[in-house]
Image (cartoon, rainbow, N blue to C red; front, side):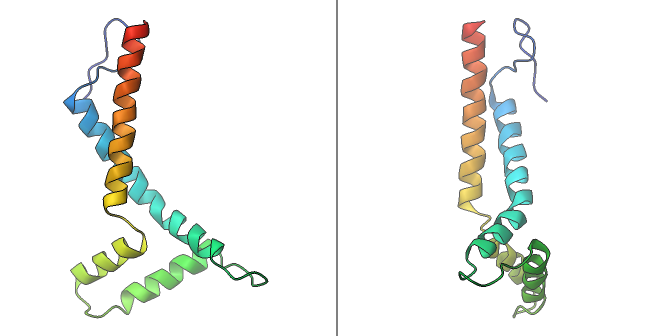
Length: 113
């Protein structure tokens, strides 16, 4: 886990452990929010004058597409979901960016204290 900085309450010491924890936490959060982002993008893509689909309808359609995927291997389905939800290099980029920002913030707070 992350060691708290003794001199500044509530500010964590920057380091490899906290950086790694932040990358993992941000990656998990980004991946968990991706179905909602996917549904929002599908809604934004609705043609003017047409009703936009609900989030549940978009996710149900995605689920049906995944179940009907060929080949029916588990790996192929996981790849399809990752592609549709755009989980990949962008997720890693966001995760590392959040972790770097956290490190900069922690260093800044230590210097300002």
